[in-house]
Image 1 (cartoon, rainbow, N blue to C red):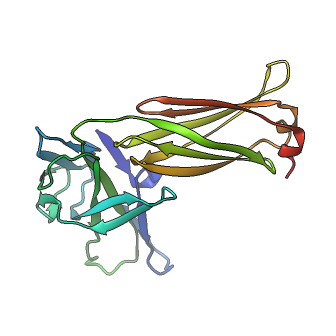
Image 2 (cartoon, rainbow, N blue to C red):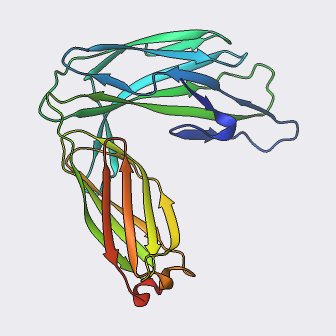
Length: 254
């Protein structure tokens, strides 16, 4: 179970609403957990349960909506309203310390390619009876929903790796029919003797099937000129993609 604590901004998406800057402001924020954090359907499972627990002492009102979740030719997320996912209730209140169950289902059977959606849980602010100025941090969290394909095909590759002006441009291609999560992209620079001179890392996120996504990673300016090769490792939740390229000092210059 993953806990979303707004004061640390641990959420998939956070929308902020700030009242006018008056003296005597109070702050308020939601504090709740959801389980599971991802939902999967297949040809044997067409229903699921999402449990939401209000960890705070105050009542919490949430509104739920579902969207089809696609990625365009650049890997950018694109959302559109959908009725493929059924869920109930759509809006509800959870008293402090209590939990609520949301029931979900799908009308779409598994097909050749994975289908992807997001269920958004959006906090609805409560009215302030005393009229006090309140700073609200409103939560809007997207829970991924996947309808697995009939047969999973997992395949990914690094189709481009080029260093120019001190920045490494990468293009990762998901050639399969199901998503994978790029947990980490690591780049290690080594000199002509094979000794490591630097390592840099970045995250990657979801990559849907049959989609490519580009990344740009800036190399450390002080260490890059000492490197002769770059070893690239793309760590995903399904496999690892590795490559190596030769570089020159000129490629490191901004």
